[in-house]
Image 1 (cartoon, helix red, strand yellow):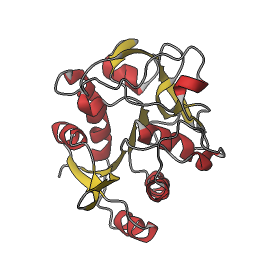
Image 2 (image 1 turned 90 degrees about the horizontal axis):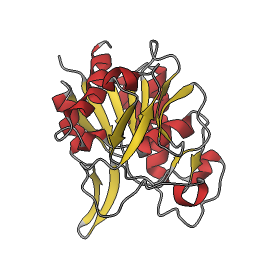
Image 3 (image 1 turned 30 degrees about the vertical axis):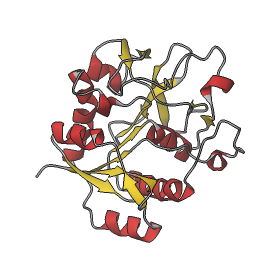
Image 4 (image 1 turned 180 degrees about the horizontal axis):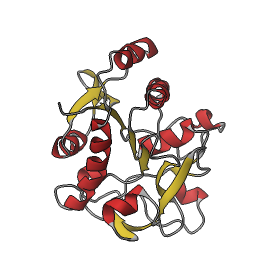
Length: 241
């Protein structure tokens, strides 16, 4: 049986109503890595618990999207906060809490990376451009999703180094926020040139799989197949449940 991987979605308002939406690249990556994707709508805490109690999920991806509301890490929003969705925040915080309690492997991408950090008592730069000294480019406006944009330095003793077998790679980038104070129980494993955390993992990865990635590997796998290694490592761990 292939592992079933839940993928969180975001709410999108369209002319004909409100939709749960997600970039299909996430599903494509999970399928290529040997899993079965299952999109998770934004729903109540009760339904989230029922889903987990049914034991249908072998892993969870916390996907990209809007900013995590600053109040969850004790701050008021600055002018550069474009939009938040606290219904999604609250649902995903509960999903993450229960997934970790049940030892379900977790992968956070972009917003998901940031949400995991906040859930583990970390904080965020609300806007890298204005809050990080000597900030470089992290959110180009007119660029393809599969375009490598900036470099990332990787620590040797990490899952990311095991996957790429190098200390430097180039990644795509679509975020204006980033990890400020790292959450408890996490270790930073990759950094941009000015020191923004680009990846972290649980300190005790042998006991629990928690991986945060700031870039979007799901959009790179077709052009740069080495990025599929992130999803293979995640799906392989999900198979062990």
